[in-house]
Length: 168
Length: 202
Image 1 (cartoon, each protein chain N blue to C red):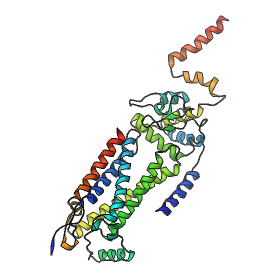
Image 2: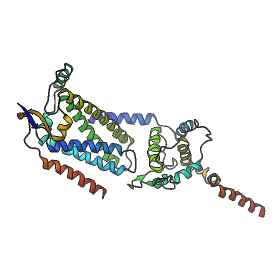
Image 3: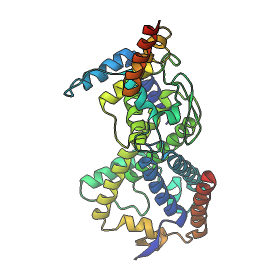
Image 4: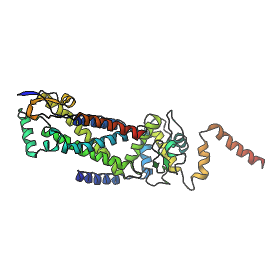
């Protein structure tokens, strides 16, 4: 028994290290899958953020457990167990094992959406999580990008800004 | 002289069916955070049942004792040969192949319990998750084998082994039977499992 356990232990340690990848490689894999869908136009961090923070008909959103800030540790909505940050910027173990990524997307999407997530949804969320906490890129660039899907606000903001400009 | 004899005492039967149900239930509740609490409750019950079974294997009635179903490999081979020659040896208690399933299920059940408890802690190595999953798959394979074995053996010896595990009775000679059913202990097992489930989820 114990010998079997040790063997399994070594085996799994080997397997998990053998398939370690970078978040970019994993995202590329999801992208390749999403690209097979007609009309695929790439991933959007903004769409991912909206998806992450919204409920999808069920009791929970992603952020119910992972909080609204993926740089922070989360808390399991039922057990209150601590969940390490989802953003690779805060937790470099995130998105380094394709098997784990697939497992948790499947499991958590079932809890949040009552179905599996599409490659588009996975890619959007992952793009968002990878972008969060980027020291330079996110702060100035993210604002207009994030505002994009909320059409009225987006239409307003630049207009407002240009107004101010003209007033000068 | 063949008559109806008591082979399986009540705690052994209660253990068997509660173990089967709690494993099935835990398996079905393993894939969602919403049913996680049920999964963990059933896992603890399964672990507790196995702990009881380990004790009962030393102090229980004749056919429940480990000593009655530790078979020498030679005995297993002889048994397999008797099967192949269509002249199957008959065992009142566990037969040599069935006993292998029991040892495997007990061993893997312990492994599942240990890794399961470890997984309740924060920050557990991924390999523990993997081992928990491997053991689950191992259990499924052995359970499948066990079910096939029970079906084959039932047909071969024209005795309904499923019913025997429910009623405790088989047909055999009186000397192979047991005299006490220890019904109170079986009831205590059920009550203990129910109390634990209530306490853990209160």
